[in-house]
Amino acid sequence: MPQASSSYHHGDLRAACLRAARDLLEEDGSAGLSLRAVARRAGVSATAPYRHYADRDALVSAVAAEGYRELAEHLAAAHPSPKTPDELASVAVAYVRFALDRPAMFRVMFAEPCDPNSEERVAATAAISGYVRGIVHATFPGSDPDALSTTVWALVHGLAFLHLDGKLDSSTPEAVDAQVRAAVQALFSVSAAR
Image 1 (cartoon, rainbow, N blue to C red):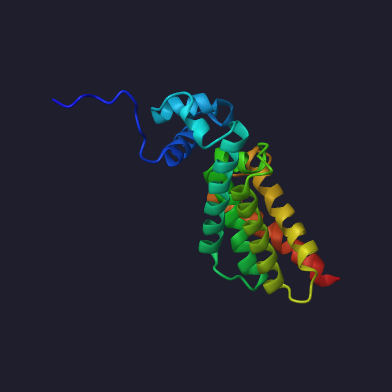
Image 2: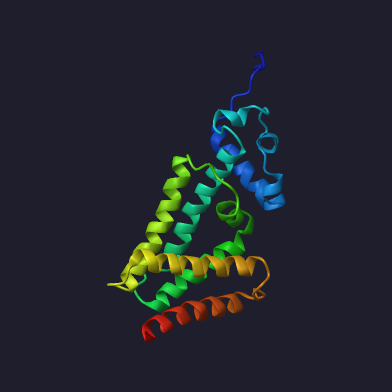
């Protein structure tokens, strides 16, 4: 009869910890997110997550990096290469809808402190920033892509948090879509009038 192993080896501890962290986020928000809670949820020893994450900030950075990648996919699915203000508004709607569909993840991505030395997080954040800069440049050639992309991102990001925090009507997807489209189009119509 084979002997039971005295130590448990997890096939993919890093992925199991990220899954556990995401599950905890969905249930309790970031307040319930700790390495100890992640270990419990993943069914590993309390020290096992430390093999991949030095501390809570490193874990949060890894979760946020996953969120940034998912957000980038979600935006590209809304419109792969927007070139008009209306197409850009569709991407803005997708951004706000992502926030509303995954509020805990969105807050971890943008409201939680993250490890600034996390290469994964820095790369994922840079990819989103580059994506926004690229679509703004394609939509408004000849503009200052850095300044305008910061303006667009700030507007859409602010709309996302206003909806999340109940300051704007998010009772139906149609209400959200209309508000976001109107705000983006107002920005560009004022810009075009000048």
